[in-house]
Image 1 (cartoon, rainbow, N blue to C red):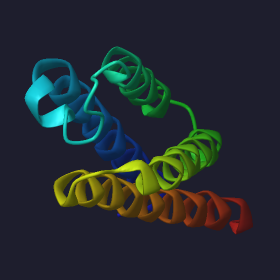
Image 2: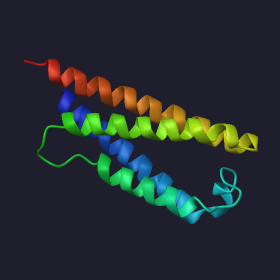
Image 3: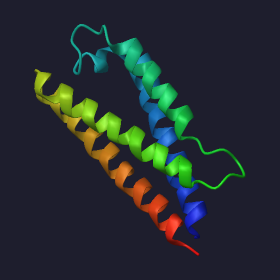
Image 4: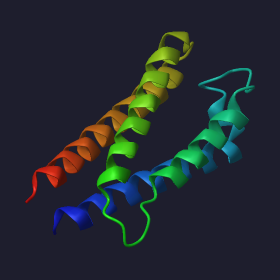
Length: 123
């Protein structure tokens, strides 16, 4: 598989993950309460996940390089957000959800950044 197709696959996979997470946050308040017991941040987190999903979708017919860099930075922002709220988690389930989200986003950021960088080096 060439790098361009792989880049699109990675971006689409990340976009679907954000869409699924946004749907879960929207439709499962009982699960979200593990992360935020008051539930007040739930609509904002759901909206941010849906927006992230939209931003990660590569435009058809365009080289994915800029979208990969944007995706890497967006995932880095989610990692920083997760790290900021991790100490505030009161339950083991909440800590696990936030830590696993940070790990997945960090992994996607590294993959996207490396694919974007590799695409720049090609002649």
